[in-house]
Amino acid sequence: MKKQQAAGASARLRERVVARINARQRRILDEGGAIQQRLLHDLEVHQIELEMQNEELKLSRHEVELERRRYADLFEFAPTGYLVLAADQTIEEANHAAARLLGVARAHLVGRRFSEYLLGPARAGFDVFCAGVLTADPEDRRNMSCDLILLTGGNRKCDVRVTAVLRDGLRPSVLLSVEDVSLRKRAERVLHDESQRKDDFLAMLSHELRNPLAPIRTSLFLLARGGLDAEAAKRPLAVMGRQIGHLTRLVDDLVDVTRIARGKILLQRKVLDLGELVRGTLDDYRPTFESLGVELAASFAPESPWVDADPERLVQVLGNLLGNAAKFTSRGGRVDVALMREAQDAVLSVRDTGEGMSPETLAHVFEAFVQGPQALDRARGGLGLGLAMVKGFVELHGGSVEAESPGLAHGSTFWLRLESVEPARPEATPALPNPSAAPRRILVIEDNVDAAEMLQEALALDGHEVRIAHDGSTGLALARDFRPEAVLCDIGLPQMNGYEVAHAIRRDAALEGAYLIALTGYAQPEDRKRATDAGFNRHLAKPVDVEKLKKLLEESHSASWHGAAGRHS
Image 1 (tube, rainbow, N blue to C red):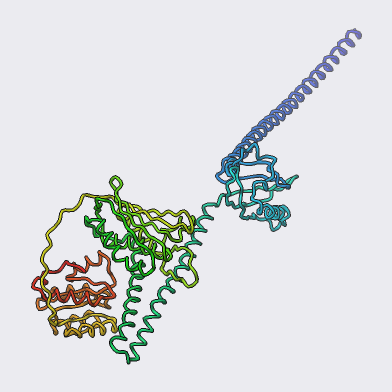
Image 2: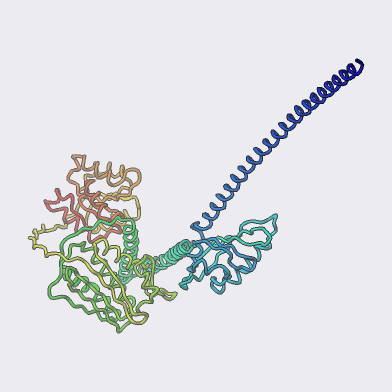
């Protein structure tokens, strides 16, 4: 019984022990599972973090690659030439623009020294420049630039501006930008040359204006002293007339060249016989050539060409070509003028045996203010405008002009070409009225006191009764009181201009018979038209030719002058 009891107690104890062990094992298993779960969770979180970091690394690497490609594209395909130079100036990298600029394939640039492509004198300067870039103070480091001359693969000189920046690293290098500034340099040289030509022109203008003023002043001095009889006074008067004519031509040349440049020239075209015009112009210039001891010869085509042109402007053109030939041909030389037809063109040549032109002068001969070399005394004179006018007028006619010369001391030839047209039919010339020199009542309206008084005295010599006014409103009031038969009116008057005076006179019935003559420095065709529209009968450019003015006043006496508005002188 006791054995049974003991056995039962032992069995129960074992059961409790097993139960406790089982419970402990279950507790250990439960705790281990939780730990394992935590470990797995931590591992999973770490794995996700690694994946995210890996994605970020991939994204960063992609962005770096994009940046590298962007830099490569900017470097490779930039319009400006870029080179990377080692410290010894060896080219390590070069972009396409640099290769094109240097005229060398990129593969052949790497490993060469940049200075090999510089013009000799520029190499030493670039060595100093490059050394300065490499040794610049880091705290004061900035882009450095200099101008160089490259000698490209085709042995072409090229002006460039190089800008350098130091690239830090284990091996310092220089990033060099190379910009072609040839066009800019050329433009700067052109501007400099233009400025120099204008300075030279101002000096020439001063000389050319002072030259005729000197004999005019001396002649005035001789006349003012008195004591000269009529015969002796003729010489200073003739000198003054010639020099004033010279000054007038200078001013006309300046005005014409300016108006050509601005497109303000209006041609007064008519169909004319070019041969007749050339013969007349040669006759006018023949005495000049004879006085210089230069032979003037001419040849004409059997059938003279006709052209549609402004005769006044063509005379200017031919006169400038003849004057140019006479100026540069020495005594004993010869000038040949030839007029011929070539297909549908009239061709005129002016050939001289004079000094000729260098290639440098020939290249710019039709530009304003350009002249061949002259001594300090400027014995040949002129403003260098004649040939510029020739080119301008000929091109306005739709023609062309060329110059050629074998060189200095070998003469020059100028070729002028215009389109020929069918000859004009002859027109009947109306009979002119017989002029009369009867005295007139004349009103002069001119704000230049000296000019008005001298004109008054000149007209009074022919018996005319002359009154003067120095502004438009005073002149208009005087006209209503004086009732002039002719009014000589300046255009550029203060307050009330000449056009307004003419309009007012034409509106006044008491003055409707007045013969109006515009006196003005505005002497272009459009100025004449404006004068006509304002009511002027005639137009005279300053300085006034008194003999021409007298003829106009004689015309005013004819019965037909009342309807003469619209005719011009």
